Length: 238
Image (tube, rainbow, N blue to C red; front, side):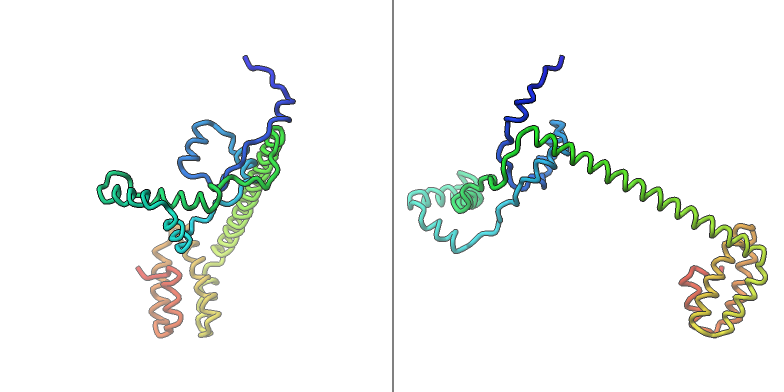
């Protein structure tokens, strides 16, 4: 049985300090969030107050000065442990200590006003609504793209039907275009040949197309510009 929630608690309870880089969770952090079933929209809303992580770049001179200032006895102990392998390598721990000293232990940013639980929940709701709107917009765009593709396909089929009714004229038009011996007409002839191939495939006369394409290639073998275009368009002899 669910307990009644005191709405005043949501208004008076404020969020904890927001850690840096909350918007870029590591793999383990994301796995933990998934395991705990944390609302991703709530995480997104919380991350809006999250700053960037402190720079991981190392100022070599500053680090050297910091190490020189360490007590001699501590440095000797670190070197002895490193030489004997009696402890983990001191490098990572020393760097962490240096960064903590330089950045004030990389404390979470407090520049942003801490929000109440109610404000966070409202923000999460807005994030969810925006996410839903984006998904609906993407689906609408996908439906529109599919509709345009279908209309284009149907237009292409209509063109092929018309071409099939006038196939002989199309072959003659191809010959006339090739006869102009110009790059533009060559491109138009290749496009027409590709449509004719589809017409013959649909009609079950692919062998006739292959024969006529072979004859065309033999007739115009000396036209090197045309000969280059044919294989580039997949119009090869079999």
